[in-house]
Image 1 (cartoon, helix red, strand yellow):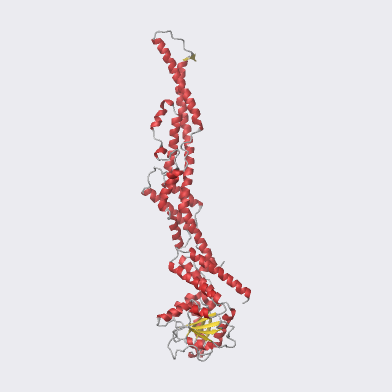
Image 2 (cartoon, rainbow, N blue to C red):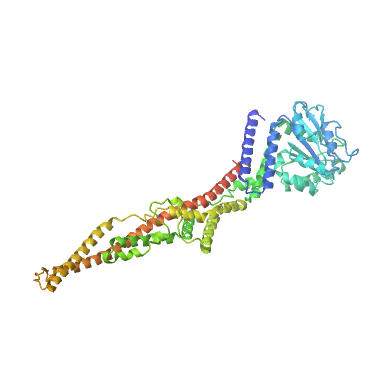
Length: 560
């Protein structure tokens, strides 16, 4: 591989690891802790491996008891390094055959391999410049728990996995279900060797290899190399060496292994998220199918959903009651200022609806006030809960299960603060309760003139009556169309006052409707602001987090 290609592959792996880390951080608190912990282990292993020798390719030999794994290991090494099964039942500790000892110590320390052997150069296979480490590992079906733990750990650490199977147990469910199938995304760094083919009749070797290939295809490893070999006779050993040499000389095994680990971790996150999966191919898995299909996107907070939420919360917070109080308060004040002066004083005995709700506080600081609106009862609380739940359901539509729950939970974060926040929002809204209308002054002046006219007429008639009572000469009263002027003054003043009062009533009704409409708009905006802070913003935060998670997962799967 050219230096340019290696740099490009390293850069791509950097981006995928960074994306996987971002996806893991974004999923904190949403996905199960054990899932996140397993992904973090992948990230830690990748970080540690990349800090160690990149010039060495670590190849692990895995197999069951009796598969001839150690014998094949010796045959590939060209010398008896490991103790074969005829002299010891199982391998109990990892053993390394090394070509290129320089620079390998730190890597082997990380692998926790104490037994190390500097292997002799083998022409056409490996020498000190090859940078190759072969590991003979304990049997994965060992009865010793410590041995099984070593195998499980090494499965996650080595660059290349060589699975050594034998003709009797090559279809064993333990190796396929526990190891091969879970590593289906690692086909590029997996070699399967059917050892001990010398125990099979020659005509059965090919059918057995084809059977093994079919089983591996069902495990998701349809493109993996499947080789037949006999460590005893040396049959096929050169092919095993050639396969190992090929991956070692390309210097891509470490990157391919880590890339496969990232794909597997992305798949694990996708499955835990409940993202739709499909077409799980090697190197991609469910995460690729999910993200490529565009699944897992939440509907989000639409304008219509926000408006409906604000409307429902406004009703639950008694905004209609306040709007009605604004209209009644205005009409009452208009009556006090423009009504018939003879009866308008009666309006002063009627309480101001806004003052009763503690919403008419000249000079008070709204932020420090609370209303006297009825406290939220069971119906109002139920309406609030239903509105929040409906909004969360609409916003989370399309989101996978755990994220849908997270979005719904975010919508309920501020539920306890909603009643008080809504009350304060209403108390802080400018309702123009003390604002006078321009026409009040004119009506009041005319009403006063009408009253003065009527009173003057009464005074005139009273003066004339007093003169008659005292037997004094009574002067002739001017007439208009035959009607005495004092009488006209009284009738005209009273009639004008009543007409003005009725007219003012109609005008104040229209003005009250206009002012209440403005109040409704302001109150709804105030309620919407509270809903935006306590309900919408947390929901949009979670929806945005899901979008970032999905994008990061797509990048981690190598699809971006």
